[in-house]
Length: 231
Image 1 (cartoon, rainbow, N blue to C red):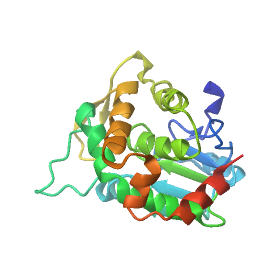
Image 2 (image 1 turned 135 degrees about the vertical axis):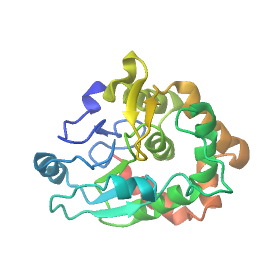
Image 3 (image 1 turned 180 degrees about the vertical axis):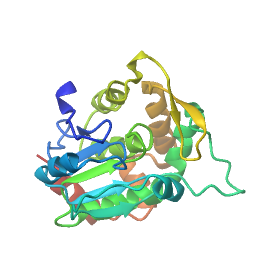
Image 4 (image 1 turned 60 degrees about the vertical axis):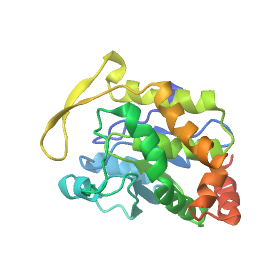
């Protein structure tokens, strides 16, 4: 599946999320943020028919690293996967991936329901879903969509693990500077991480459609998303 990667100058880890289950290629893409997007990158995004960008980052990340548009006319939706950092919410540090993944499943429901509403609407495609580097928050969101379109867990996991290759993490952790200016380690993803998010969803809601319904997604919206994204 390495042919899924697409070279978009200034954007990391950009690839087509389709080609598995009933999810067609050319409809749903995943990536890191657009904060370093170049003019040439924007031209290539326009050629892909970009209509919607779903940004899963925090408000502070957007303030520090705003996406570049270069006159692109897509709609951007800011739908944070994680809650705002408040004193009453104990957010897992990015390095604590084992804690982060079930926590994302617990907090991502409103974001995912809003994604479904947008993808159910006419004219929403093509869409790019991104966070900072397109690995964790994007990984869960894309996995939910791929599952909804009938992809197997093995197919979903194989696509998810491609982020290690796309980010150069196939050789191990790599240092980076976060939005606060602190140096952290970006760690490779593994199958157990995504499985823990999906297990949280299944354990509390039974199925992914029921999880989405719990957060306000209607059956009509689910049907429309499947129809819009299907091959």
